[in-house]
Length: 404
Image (cartoon, rainbow, N blue to C red; front, side, top):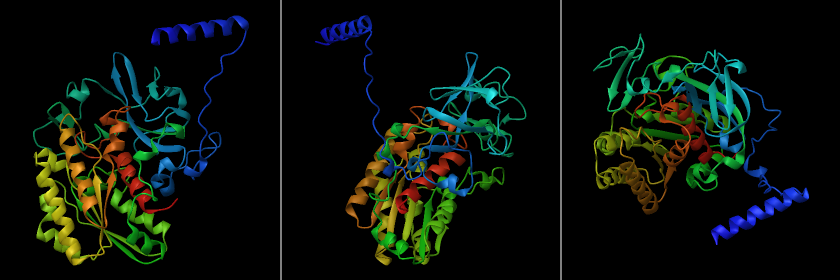
């Protein structure tokens, strides 16, 4: 039947061509603009990047600002990929967001951006990403003493907090087709939960939030953490500012996250006491990456996360929880099956306890990496988000808590 259908289709095309008729194209799916309150006329879009553009969920509109891409030279071609195929490029800049590259430096075809001959965009080679032939001043070490220049080869991956990674990422702003979105992968106000918190927010009451977790929650690899351009604050601080701009009450965010920690640390009495002392309305929890790195069993991970929830709610029964499924670390260094098992455990906890909900950064990061490479969106090559992927945390948290 498949062969017969192909023959019929070919005959139909041939007859249409012979008769001078045009075979009709499949019409594009119409856009439901009510889902995209920040949609703009593609021809009227301009590059503008203040705090509003930095944190407003891009999936509520049709413009992405400063998506990061690392161009890599392979077989004589210097290129990288954007998440979506641009309708219009608004700007291509360096990591500081200040310096713009001329359009003559690059060509965009589909979602691929290529550097033209003579272009000045930064790039690395495929060999560099394997730790080979990396130029000075970068130096391979066994223990980092100079954050800017030192790198370590971890397995097949380069680890560094220096400009070897962030300095070779460009920032691309562009208009995209919202029909390319998988909206179900992003947080939404309507389906996120947090009824008690939203009631207080909408009533203009003061709200307290505590963030606990690992280095990603602490804000490591955000540029402000290392006091370098563009000095972008971490997603916890951005969330506080975004909520304060959206609501009349005073929203405070206390960040007690510590880099290198695991769920067992988070569930310990000292951390529970610290959380309870802050009397939060919401606790945002981000553990899992370091647990996976130490091969903590999914059962133990669940026990620790559940203990944290139970012990806090025993003393603060109205406190709600946001359990974050982390943005993926480098799968060359971490087992994705282990992480997925952790996220199932978080779903189980959310189903069993009142006031507990999940925020899924993992699925959208996996979808992103079907197009992009991990070095496009990492701050250290191993497990830290960069300024752009940190902004994705802010966008999704705000989308869960703000009705745009």
